[in-house]
Length: 102
Image 1 (cartoon, one colour):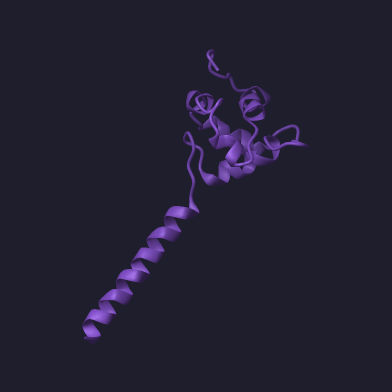
Image 2: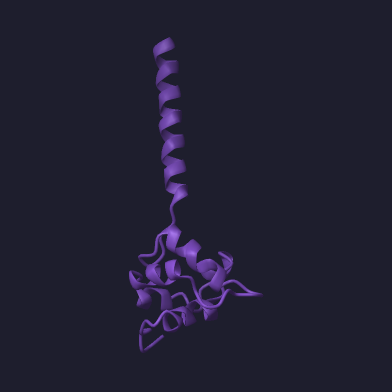
């Protein structure tokens, strides 16, 4: 009986660690949560920070900009507090060339 209870406790601990690790990181179009957080002040209304921080621009250099463009009309960005128009304006503010069809 004690072995079964110990097994259940171990299983619960493993599940909690897995859920915590999974919820800790967010990746969007090859930008990790640190990059997203660095850019958030520049893509949040009503007073976006201008110009974007160097950390934000650095994160954008590794981002998949075509993927980011695909979120233009998505409800995902607004649900994260991100204004899509401000977000899609970041590449040019960071001296990056946005995709032509964006």
